[in-house]
Amino acid sequence: MNNTNVNLNIKNIDDEALLKKSLGMFSTGITIVSTLDNNQKPIGMTVNSFASVSLNPPLVLWSINKKQPSYDIFLNANGYAVNILSKNQKDLCLHFSSPIENKFDNVDWNFSENGHPIIDGTLAWFDCVKWNYYDGGDHQILVGEIKSHYHKKNEPLLYWNGKIS
Image (cartoon, rainbow, N blue to C red):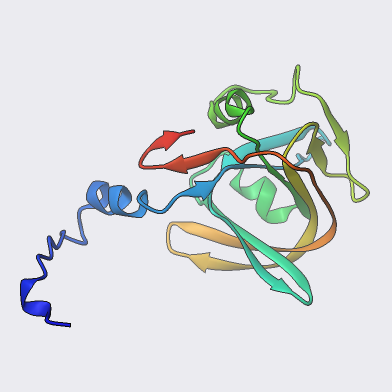
């Protein structure tokens, strides 16, 4: 392959807005990660930084911004549930990404075997206990061991190019 004809439009790596736009070219699924706060009330947040890590042991990861108000709660929790949203759950995505308190009010959910909030009607869910966590710059990477899971046939809710579809 002759690379002399390739037109590379190289962006400044220090421009966070342009970097975010480039990263947004990778489509991701959308999840709500949920746990209990110190008062045993359910909390959750919309997350698209979710990935499988290992089948043996069964591990998944997600990352949380260190400035997120619920950062300490998630970091110190014994685990969490990852709820993968289906295409018809855009309203839940927006609801859990908003700054409102008591996000679980008027949301149908149940406790997992490990006591984590599982949202009814999701495409899939994973009930996880804390495995480890790692520094990831302005984020913390949380790795959980899957203790139980569920999925159903449906289409996923996706995030691509700054849009939810």
